[in-house]
Length: 235
Image 1: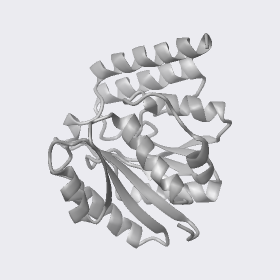
Image 2: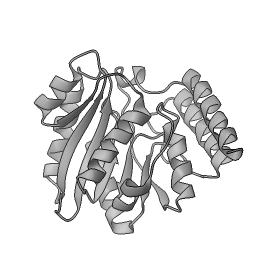
Image 3: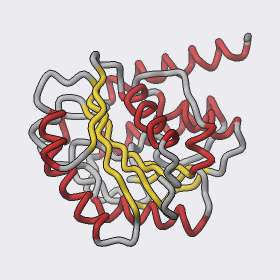
Image 4: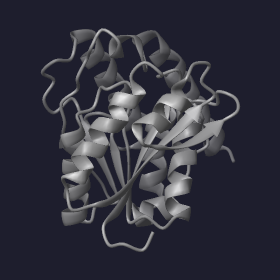
């Protein structure tokens, strides 16, 4: 992909057949109205429903995982594709309709103008629309991320992230589940990549409330992160 300001929109998806076509169509419409050269990629992470077919109907390119391997693994697949194809930027977004397409484009353009390597769309700069439980859970994991890895961000678990070409070439992580969100920040810090945030709005429908992380899962995330941190201290 040789065009200047080309961007790959990476959407990891697992059993999102009922909404993924609309998500793809909406982001495609927003991208068409911008000056960006783009491709929308859905990484179908071993879904048991018709996620892959619906994503294709929406106009996305689809990469299929035979087995469900986790959000971290699906994201890595999508970013690896973007790097191999030579995109200038990549941006990840959730498949459940939680992110506004206009916030995706704003993030891409902000990353272009600031030359930041990893730009996170933060739901916690303005928490309007978020339940108190989700706010507390995400703030808690952000505090854990700061404590374990020394990275201070307001929303360490956000799925909306913009990656520079430099980040695409160098940023890797070892975890495959949702804990990758925090580990990614740790690896970015180790590589001296610049990290910043910008405010986004989270859209919580009855459908999206059933997806993604929950506060019980946060306990497992913390356990995994602590284990990873301890292991690497003694390596």
